Image (cartoon, rainbow, N blue to C red; front, side, top):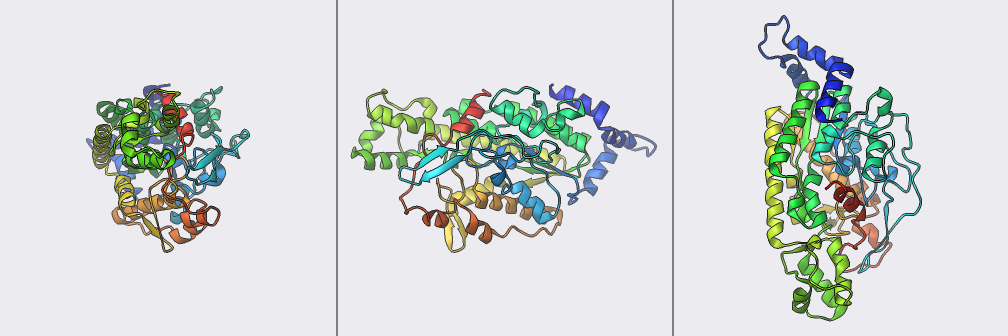
Length: 448
């Protein structure tokens, strides 16, 4: 089902409330604006969270350490915002060992050792509930409007689509996408954070050309905002995209050379020639896995292009993220949405760290902000993201939502460095293990 058929199904069938609003806007009032009534409802709903839905990808789903897992999802930014603002949220909580199976830290190293939890999940903790956190890990911008759950999904991305959207969604007589459900729900607030994977795929593949083009992104984002703003009475709270080159999924080449030199005794300059990397480049887990093969003679150097973002490619990715964020800002402004600057937040954490309970965490691998997959935040990181949403809403919407208290969350966070230190001896800066990014690589490369 494409976006046109979803919109038609919702408008002609399920969403009579939206149709009524549209018709009332061009009725006896004499208004020349057919959207007057729905726009009035949207303005009235600013700060009204009584019926809220969340759309997006793994970051809004509460994905952590390579998995959608019930014990982690409850620490995502969405349920934290809901708790602070005192409104209800229903998440598609997934039983242990999660989907995909969650990563587990055996040792922080160096080198760190990470394994994948064994077993198979039984799926949703509750298959009977309609979720309001509709975000699907691995979702691209186009998926929010177009991708629907399948009755017989293949393992991987299709399975995640069904786990989130398929219960009891299929019971409505039609399979609906994220935005299809959002329109059906006629919410008062829609939280939207999407586009991260359209950029992140460059990290996964080592190739900026894998990113969604700016022209396609512009068309797709405009279509999504048009659907949500003309078919739902919700005020939109929209987040932008962080600099995906600054997540610890990518290891700085300077650190890779230093660590490899310490392990092998080979000078960094010699390793630079052999591996084909230099300071300013970034190496992803695919590239890290090739290093021992190259040095052991099992593979010819340099590291394949799929394993490296060169310094020039990093600039290219950053420029495209900036362009994406320009599209998001323009669309948010066009519908009077509240825009949350996540890009600035991640940049601040990367530059200055995160001071909590007398300790300054960082955006490095196992530095406290990102969990084991090097892409998704820890409990503490998600709480910081929640506060960015809260602070932005308080400033622009005149709400008075209290911030999440970071101290208690960090004190209980298994990946906050002082807590790690109670279990493991302190170690020098660490490279992300080659297997840490397998789950996101499988999700995103399967779409391209």
